[in-house]
Amino acid sequence: MKKVLSNSVKGYTWARFRKDLLAGIIVGIIALPLGMSFAIASGVKPEYGIYSSFVAGIIVSIFGGSRFQIAGPTGAFIPVLLGIVLTYGYQDLLVAGMMAGVLLCLMGIFKLGTLIKFIPRPVTIGFTAGIAVTIFMGQVGNFLGLTGMEKHESFIANMKEIWLHLDSWNFYSVLISCICMFVLFVFPKILPRIPAPLIGLVITTGIAMLFFKDALPTIGSAYGEIPSTFPPFQFPDMTFANMSKLIGPAFVIAMLGGIESLLSAVVADGMTNTKHNSNRELIGQGIANIVTPMFGGIPATGAIARTATNINNGATSRVSGVIHGIFVLLTLLVLAPVAINIPIAAMAPILMLVAWNMSERKTFQHIIKLKSGDTLVLVITFLLTVFASLTVAVEVGLLLAVVLFAKQMGSSMQIEEIEPEGAEIAPHLHDKISIFTIRGPLFFGAAQIFQQNIIKAIHVKPEFLILRMGKVPIIDATAEGYFHQIEKEFSKQGGQILITGLTDKAKESLKGSGLYDRIGEEHFFLHTEDAVHYAENALSELSRQLLSVET
Image (cartoon, rainbow, N blue to C red; front, side, top):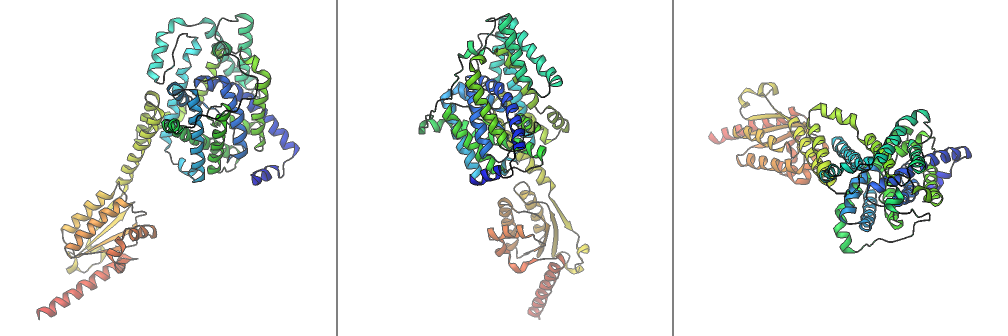
């Protein structure tokens, strides 16, 4: 902590503070409508999104691994949080959020931050696009002002609700939604420095209050008053029974939060030519999600759009993120009574635009055009995210990606038998020495192919089998098992295996399995020529011994 403070204060000037102050206020202005919108879409009261914005925002700015990171509720969490609320309720959402925070801290402590980066791109694009579709379609009812609808965890059930209640559409809601949508697209070109979502909410709220008050649902009519006080401290019901049923949802929140926050940090690195600490970022996100539920806030993570806005508006340090959180809190204390007049329909276009921006549509189209294994992973992950759940989508997507990767790597392995003439073996020894060149990793996806090819050579019954393995980077446990079978079968018929050019890493694998000692250290050579000379000398010695016995 002392190191964090010293690094932040060292060289900090009034000029830098002014830049951080401006950036923090602008991001805070953006965070307010988004926090409320994400909370409402997640099935909870709007103030819970505001609580999360300032509590998590301040904590992540202080403890996170990127000095430009802005944290808070994000669109990616909406389907997950809504499903938890519908299944378990708001109080259990707090428990799941706190458990996710603990998991994130453990991931950071055990330095798993780098592992998240190995999640295949088609999987992340697939579930991100699926979440975007779910968010977008989930706002159709609010856009049209439909009444009497029930929220469901199932996408198909929600679409059925929209269809059954289409006749309840509200003209004023549609009008407000269209006005807000117009503002979101036009005003960034006119007033790029002022957040369009804020302008949209101010204009539409003013129009609704002046011309058709009480003609459409507002935050106040749907959720009651927003408390203009600091959120009360509460400790979630962390009983063993409660936590055991929520471990699954907590794990999903932690994984999604970790992925989102690290992606956001990578974006910040690219924009500022800096380098974040991935494990520290996970710990910072974990602390934020442990503390936030104590004040009623929903789970939070690094927000890519808000982080980019923070940088684009001149942020120079973590101070801008802290200012953003303080601004959100002060705004809650001062303007909460006004916020209850915001039309629900005005928030629908904001979330639809968030969904559109997070959909990764260009990358999605590019991977589709590849028509490869990545395309299959992308499509399946996307469809399962929309029609099943994020948990199932990620699990199946990762499994399918691993299987396809193993298949590709397995097919990349090459086993080539060298003709005796090419190895300069004495003509009378051609049928006694077999030489194979092996290229590529020997792992579970290629082990059986390796065994089948070598067994064919063994059945010809050479006396020496020379394996050129200089191009084999790794040997896993599965391949070692097949290797043991080859050595055992070849030894039974009196043959010897000679290995050349083995890399240090592959050699360590064989030593760990005991296969190195079984083959014998004297049977490992640096060059193929040395192995050939060894085999020729051994065969010549054997011939002399047989000849002396006969005579």
